[in-house]
Every structure is written in C-alpha cells, then in structure tokens.
Image (cartoon, one colour):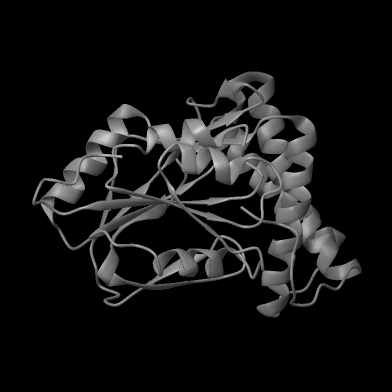
Amino acid sequence: MAETSNKGPTLCIGILTLNEAHRIAQCIQSASFADQLLVIDSGSSDRTREIAEEMGAQVHLYADWQGFAEQRNRMLLHVSADYLFFLDADEIIPESLQREIRAAVLSGERAVWKVYWDQVAFGRTLHLMAKTEGGVWRLFRTEDLVCYEGVVHEHAVLRDPLTPVRAFRSRLLHHSRETVYGGLLKMAQYAQLGALRRVQAGRRGGVLRGLASATSNFIRLYIFRRGFLCGAQGFLFCLLVALECFFRYAIIKYDRPVPGPTLAKR
C-alpha cells in the first residue's frame, strides 16, 4: 500500500471477492497505490483471502450473502480513508487511471467520479468498442456516500443528490468473460438477477419481449458501439449480452422468480 505519511486526503480501494485466487493478486497489485486496501469476501473456498492478506489487504469475511449492495454496505463499515474507490476483482487499474485517481483524491473536491471500461473477453481487449453510455460511479468522498441499493447493477445513494459527477478519461480493464463456459454461467446468473429486478418493478416477461430486448441490445453493441471491429471475440461478447437480455424475460414468464438469496456473487 501507499505510504500514509502525507497530510493530504487518503484513499481506500475496496474489492468484493468470491473464489478469485486466479486473479486477485493482479487486481490488488494495480490498487497498491491506495492508503487502505479492503477485501470483502463472500465465502471463497480457494486461497482468495490468503493471497489478499499476503499482499497487505485488510480482509473481512461475510459469507451470508444478501446481494451486491449489502456487501458494499458492509465494506463501508471498515473504510477509514477520506475517499473510497470501488474495484471489482475482475478489474485492473492501468497506470494512466492510477494517476487520474491520485489527482482526484489530492484535489479534495467533493464530487463523484465515474469510469468507463475496456472489456477484456476471450483473451482480447475490446478497446475498439465505444464507451458505455453512462459510465459507472466508482470514486466517492466517503462521508458523502450513504449506502448502496439494488440486487444487481447496484447504485449509490448520496447525501447530496446534486453532488457533481466527473469522468475519468482512462478506462478500467474489465476481464468480464475469460472463457465461453464462464461467460455462459455469468449470463445465467445475471439473467436471473435481472429478471428478479424487473419482477419487483412490475415488468412482464415472455419470448417476444425477450427477442425484442436481445435484438435491440445486440444491434446497439455490435453495430453502434462497434463490436464488429473486435473480431470473433467482439461477436461472442455482444451475443452473450444479448442472450442475457433474452433470458431475463423468459425467466420472468416461465420461472416466476421471487425475492430471496441468489447464486450470483462477486
């Protein structure tokens, strides 16, 4: 971790984990410039926690899974720094983004910073794809962050809803789909969670709704966000996302999900 002898604002980087022994060292190494490193583990059965501790992270085990938002809220209980950056275990912070994060923290500004991803799928960085439309909020002043809400694609609740939002220019590397098999598992998990969220919002399911969602999302990713420039890996990535959209609506219609524990952890 970074030296904490300076008198400027401090930074915590927090990571949620579950069975990430094959990847956690590289993730933590990219975050080692932080003053505090936190790992909130959801019950790993491999060496994730041991590796994280060996690399200097503070590790806390919360195996009673209640959802992504609750794991982030549990993390907040252990943050002792002025700023908090949320990092997923399948992400890497490039040096250019490290510099931007340091500068944002040293500025002392009361703001939220969002990041964009370069997806890494099936061994290829899909850097030719256009940025995601909105980016993801990741860096906060700790005292400004109230909590997280949501089953999946959780969102932050701020003390001041008018807090300005800045954007980092450099992108996170997101190793979202390393294998086709792993991509199919992730698709099934997120389709289930997405279906539950839509049921709670009163949405209806069905094959036709699923086909419409899948088709529109595939066109958006593959054509308008230039997935076609990324070869076979780009096609597979866009197809799996589209299939996830389809199966959300199929699950609503035929599985009729109800609120409760899910298998998807991070």
